[in-house]
Image 1 (cartoon, rainbow, N blue to C red):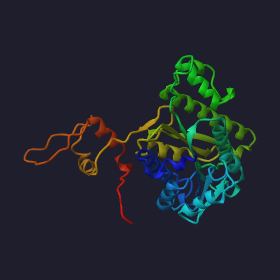
Image 2: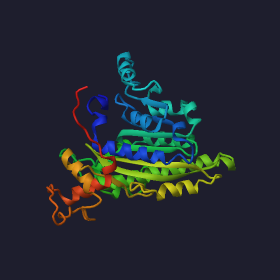
Image 3: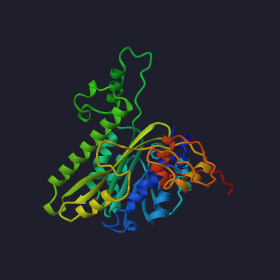
Image 4: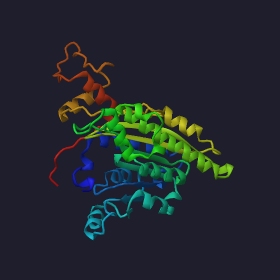
Length: 341
């Protein structure tokens, strides 16, 4: 069963926050080129949520959605559903896997590109290979992202061995020996450890691919990669998203990167420690009230300050940790409400 048949990708709060943060980062790419001149390659599914956001907010019109779920079956009805739900005519639907299609998108690689390999499965040899294809083709100024599932496996009672052994055996199901770092069999592979492992594997792939790309390129066409995001979030299972900006070694891009890194964006991450997107459970009234006091009546520990003298204020009893989590993401926090259209 295709993932879109049991997950509504447009109604996941942590994912919605991540999209808005990515959108804000994309705005910072304008020193490379106007963002509306970029191409966008992603996986829209039948909801196309990121496509709608990036088109409406950034004006990107050169868009390609790769749909593996409609490419693995010879069924016109399945493809018809994707075509019907496509929100804008500027979205080009390509049916098949990323491995099948990424190498064929010459028109998209001719421009600076934002690519989001937004997988919902475990890190696999195929995903790593797809990332390598993108890193070979994307022009300087491009933003490349990949998302993977990082849920630790639970050992079934039928398995005759330790949790560590079971998890390593499961890892070998997804990754070949060449992609598993030495010593991994000695790690417990909890979710936190799996996040570190996935980051290491993906970061190594990016660096190796860039090195190979430069080895075959003239001096004036050599590039570099710079990690700018590392998100951990969870709406159902824990997920990891890592992103890199590609720069031209022969151009003065250091200033652009410095401005991005020094911008007041708390989620920028250049290393293995992820930015955790947490979504506290708050009512619409609590959210509205918090917005009005976050910068005046909340201390650094998330405690709501008492009313000032002669100030009448009905204050909700919220946990400081929830207040802090909300304060970290409030600019991007989604509001879902039922509407009669």
